[in-house]
Image 1: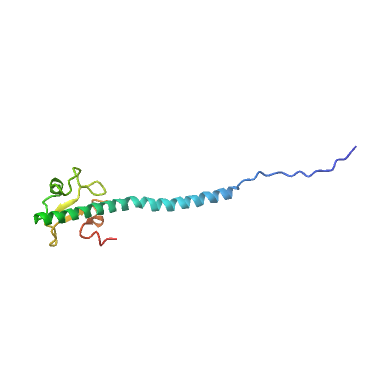
Image 2: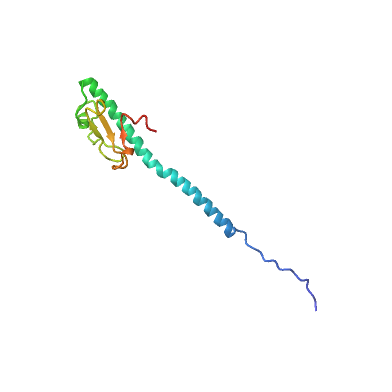
Length: 138
């Protein structure tokens, strides 16, 4: 009887990641995604505020030009659209939320006119955008 040398059997473990490593990677990805989501979600509102301010600034310039030419501010914003050389666009003048801007002449506090956007929340006056104060807001 021949005796063959005893071979030790080694169990080979397939290379891969352990459950702890996979869990750690998933947690890290979740944290990164939440940080990105928080930063991206707020950009929509900021974009609407910026669009509203740009629109209001354009209208302010056109109102001042109208005043220089006619020595009075127009009674309505639609007048600016009807008079050639000013806001001659057939679309209604709206803010970033798709709502009409509030315009009145004469304005409050001895201002020649008021031009306001109700902002995101119609019930909250804290987010209203006033053409006279928008450059001071941050």
